Length: 436
Image (cartoon, rainbow, N blue to C red; front, side, top):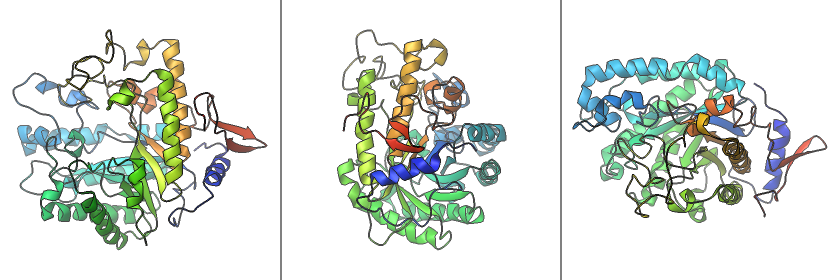
């Protein structure tokens, strides 16, 4: 795996926040000891219609509402669902994909999976059988010198009501103690796999994106405490990853629990789901990313902070990104607070296709990629969402890399805030877009 000047970059990043020390971390990340540079293997074990629309196409316009993995299996029945998902698990992530990701200079993959793989219930329509495929992906990652984080992406009752939790709709995770207990059961199942593949799986994310607006944040932190104790008894050397619950960076200190070690805070940065980001011009996207860098770098002094999801999308035009059969805020086909498109002639035509991008757009995308990489490496690293998609190129790392729209390897940056100074990488706090 080619990682250029990684030791220098890491040293520079750590020096930039040397005025205080994060919570103890017994080991740096993965085999290389480098900052994390990785991608998500989304759409494999938790279906999302926008990532793999081909799996959901037969219900487009149908009276049967198939919008997530729950309804996918409920409508098909367990036997047919098992058959279709078995084929999907065999084909969506291949060894060739993993080898390609390694050749791009990455060092990690993040693997989302649902609770139902480890803590099934007869009351749920989900099917099982994911674990052998999960272990196969982990083994491929190790073979190609990548490390893995296993991410509990969906929990019983849903922690956010998003389709990517397995079940779209209400937020019911904290409404029953059984849901919490089964979530811990799933964390422990993941921990057993992490312990079995301890040289490859260096971290476990105990729940993805718990939504503070539908949950007790104190209850989320209590779950983190219980998960910490539970999985450490099984995989004592694994790093625990906790999500910021979409709280403001000013509130992240609530997650800095005395007595913990080997804990990472995960935050997600997208530019398409809220009005203030979606309505930005191109330079504003770059400038906003610099503000994100300040937040990540600042909190990295308290908890190692990783940006576990980001993309190059500046519109929400990817088909079904906002949900099955739902339109986009960008062109006004999804009802939202602006009651129309972002601007009068806004169109989704060509927004997600590299083939349709002119040179100015391609240049911006490369700038946007490098600016985000710089920002998130002022913390402890990043995972791009996603490794590939069926049709949304601005979310497809492999396709972006093929067209030179992300740096290969990630350190080969043209517009970076990093400068090579006497064989050492140094961050320039002031650049074309960043003024600190």
